[in-house]
Image: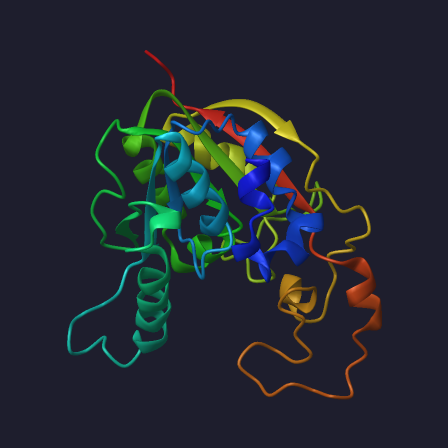
Length: 256
């Protein structure tokens, strides 16, 4: 795992290791090189560029449940950006000996199984739950992960963490989610909570940023999402905070 994290192919990704703690996080989730792993919404592949070589070198297997692309005529225009992200991911992570045989599937509102039922040792939700809440598919994410996991398999969740006692916004519009709410969603899907880790905590994160969690690095917004950047916005206090305060939770699919 240390070899995969230190890989030269991660020249751009390593700058975020101080905030994402990949070795400690994946160790906490009980990863092993021979495991079958399912990564939900890998995006551009920050975690994939660690997971794929690690598993390929150890006899394991990686499923990547990318964005579900609407291939209908009506959805073509609105999904162009999503389709491009998926196409770039496919080009980078398939047909490359370093990454092994990454199996691409989909996750979205009407997607089928993210991986064959009962085949997965470890499923990963890496800072995507707020997106699924906004899209109304958070419950489906937990259900799809549960179906894919073997009995005894682990679900690892990393998510921007809201302060205890705040009212949970159902759409998580600022990107932060209550830890208790995540545990509730997992329990409703049938998971048993195992443990939490503070490895990705950031006590400097005040969570009251003008453009939500995306005010912080790496997004570093200076204006609301979708609007032009504001060169007069003072980024200094947000850059000093660094990346968000994050919960790191481990759940298990019961063996019985």
